[in-house]
Structure formats: structure tokens, C-alpha cells
Image (cartoon, rainbow, N blue to C red; front, side, top):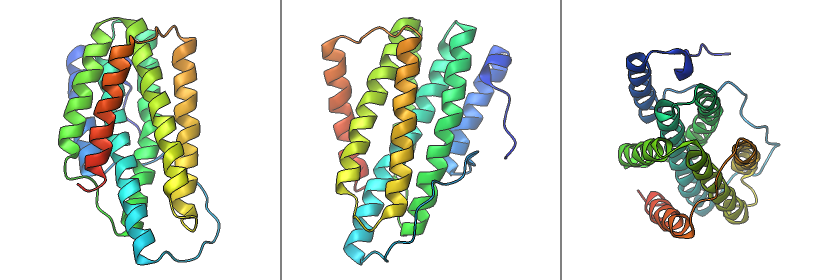
Length: 217
């Protein structure tokens, strides 16, 4: 298992801020290492050029989602005033690191590149996560639930769109979907407050812009 940094819950405020900056650099540079093995996929036929391009575009979108997840959880861990919740966000961020590394590896295998706008996606998600956490724990957890539920639906759509022959990508997406569902359930159990409908609609609209752009850029 690769070495891990101390969780934000054990650091001073200044050290936590520096650790957050270090995490941003690792996320954007693609140096994160998964603690769990890549989801297994059986032997599959080679993809043709069209299938490879489609899989590459979809996995780029999924990689962007994981860049945003790192930013969201890191910001929420940094901003919350509740040590127990900080530990929860810190653990979720570590689990999402696996997704980040898996999708990055799959992009390399497909000959595809990450989104050129990843710094923008990270900065935006960090700011949203910070603001949500400063509004209170119940709202912050509600934001997690809504985010993860939207991601689940998004991953379901990718399972429908990925080429049937691309079992390697499909195995990754299925494992990610299971983890996101668990994160949402844990947030609900921890006391999440449902978000107002206008905020949920705004989140969905923003997600459509992000995924539509990342498909190409």
C-alpha cells in the first residue's frame, strides 16, 4: 500500500491548508496512487477507433468528476468545524483517490488525455465545497448526498453508452458507482438535510455544462 499523508483532522489549521494545496497539486499533476487494485476485467476484444474515441471521451468526463470530488471533499474537510465530520470527509477523499487513479490509468490505456480545464474544474469545486461546509454540517452533508446521487445517475448513463467490448472501463465505472452510492448513504445517516429544489436544479445545470465541455476538452 502506498504511503499516505496525515488526515486533515490531525493537522493544525495552517498545516491543513498546506496539505490541501499539496493535494491540489497531486490531483492536477496526476501523481495520486490508488490504495486498491484496479477493478478486474476479463479478456475483451480490441476496440476499434470509434469505440476507443468514445471510451476515451467518457472516461475523461469521469476523470473530471473525480478531480471535482477531490476538491469538494478536501474543501469540506478543511472548512467544517466538526472534527468527526472532518474525518468523514477526509476518508471519503482518500477513497475517491482510487477513482482518480483508475480513471487516469484508463485514459492512458485508451490513448486519451485528461481535460485541459482540470485546474478550472478543481478551483470551482473547491470553492463550492468550502461554501457548503461553512453554511453548516447538515447542509454540507446534504450537498454530498445530492452530488453523489447525480454522479450515480451519470455513471449509469455511461454504462449504457460505453462500448460493450470495453469491459475494462465498464468495470471501473461499476466500482465507482458502488462507492458513490455508499458515500451518499453514509451522508444521509450522518444527518444530511435535503437541499432546496432551486439549488438541486442549479447543480444539475452546472454538471451538464461541465460534462458536455469535458467530453471534448
